[in-house]
Amino acid sequence: MSEPMNAGSLFVVSAPSGAGKTTLVKLLLERDSQVRHSISYTTRAPRPGEQNGREYHFVDVAAFSAMRERGEFLEWAEVHGNFYGTSRLWLEDQMHAGHDMLLEIDWQGAQQVREIFREAVGIFIMPPSVAELEKRLRGRGQDAEEVIQRRVAAALGEMRHVGEFDFVIINNNLQEALDDLCAAVRASRQRFAKQAARHPEVFRFLNIQ
Image 1 (cartoon, rainbow, N blue to C red):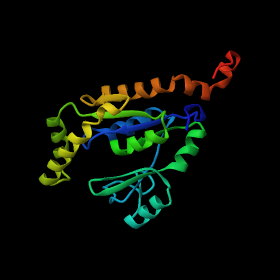
Image 2: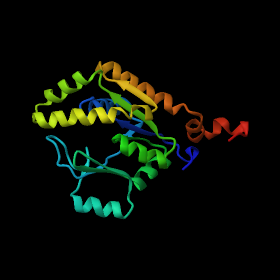
Image 3: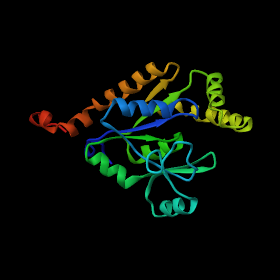
Image 4: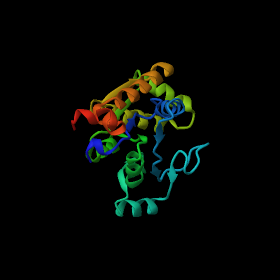
């Protein structure tokens, strides 16, 4: 799919567990009304406070497998023993309509998305250090020590893929990280292909593609 076909931008945000991605994305969506959150499907159980159809579409493994076999997912991945996937048709419709869409997925899913949407903007959220990451995971008070150590080990593997992304936000200070995230989103909208798709009348007299 070539970039000029879609007036809307696609933002792919990834991060290791504990880097602050969920909080930053929530604040971005509150600040920038042009960005819409793509709601993924998952087989994991809802966490306290989560609602079906808001944070995720929660389905069982059988339903997820059936959707995957029908080719309904843009990307899907298994993370910590659970499956996650993004509806391709719905996402394409939203972008054709000019909406900026945001995906929260892991690096594996980001690779799959880039194979179809070459213009997707990759943003990776990094913790300032592994020690700080571990401190944040402990601060949640939700996981046993074994789970925390497993998540830290997984995070190290995930962070080795940071070079595959266009922007890297180091979340040492929440407000600064949010400002950086918003700046990356605004800058990405100014690419020529997006401006030409959103405002063709501005460029029409130049007779260029």
